[in-house]
Image: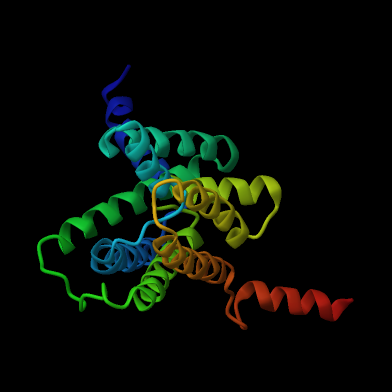
Length: 229
């Protein structure tokens, strides 16, 4: 093996990793990670609104089996990513790793400061709506780039791909299933507010992911095709 081949290997690896990644994609993922983590840190955590999906399942397992979230979360996320890799491919995993790192970095940043929003504990419905908007818009921007923030998004995207459901329906399926199981240990009043934020975030993720500008290249191409018919 020559030195040229040895030296060229890192550059080939970097090129493969950056394939399909643009500054626009990175910018959208960073913005989405910032919005999503901001809403969870400043609203959901403080008001104690539970989630559906993998996060809610993690809390459920912790309550009934006493398994630490530090142990069960990587396992659940890993299973979802393995499933997503088989269905959605390596590009999805690459974008997901980038977005997950961005979310983690922003969580670390927010933790350096006191909460930046007023405490909405006395207004749980308002907190549910505001939290749903932050999470829905943030995760929607990330999913639009074919990435995910964690196992929740990977599982929902896989279900939507396999069943041909709308993305919002796939999110609601996983979230409502976990919220229904969570009734075994969470009062129904708290579940109602969690249901509100889940509905809002699921619908908003779907809207953001499928949004197209009226004069985008795709819409112009569709208009020309329609005109020929």
